[in-house]
Length: 296
Image (cartoon, rainbow, N blue to C red; front, side):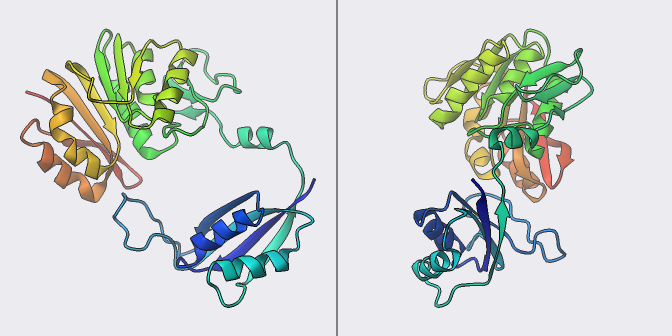
């Protein structure tokens, strides 16, 4: 079956409601993009919950996938009214031929070279370097496929910092990629915590797939003990609040690494952790930083 891809130009006040209306009307998928992406007017948006008073792009593009036999104008007329638009907004459409969507999706995820000896490889790919340390990881529901700058920053730091026999806590573990990398790099005790049950389940599956013995749990309430390394790739606001909790798991000489922090948020985080240890920027990438330090 062929499909129709519908691209509709609107504004940030109506984009989300229009996308929802399209899904309710039978669209297979609907997404919201920057209508100016790839131009000088592109508006990058990244940050934390609460950092935007009105998220989205003033010039938005709602992209929906419809069945090929859909009455596009009738669907759009109905959905525009549902979204509070007096008139249907301008749109374009193109036919999308039937494809092997699984194979097409897989081709979009190639092996990622993190460093000279560390690779992240989807399960359907052969390792590019048989002598490398390979993390088998498929894209999925939990954050952490190795492609995001903050994940890369943490992986590179772990490769420099993990020593054989070390113990490690991955706080906010997502897919478990950092914990699993630590295990593959020689850590003997690996623990991961995440508030998302789906993430914990995925992390457990990923650890088994990589032959890493690790403990993943949903609640930090039952977490005790101290570790040689604590790593947390979350966001600046929760990292600020978590400073006492994270540092309580550091023994003298232990290492702490934090990411999910924008460059302009570095000083604030360094100050928040100053009562416990001295942090410094150890690396930056695409506007994100990795902070690290050792507890005296």
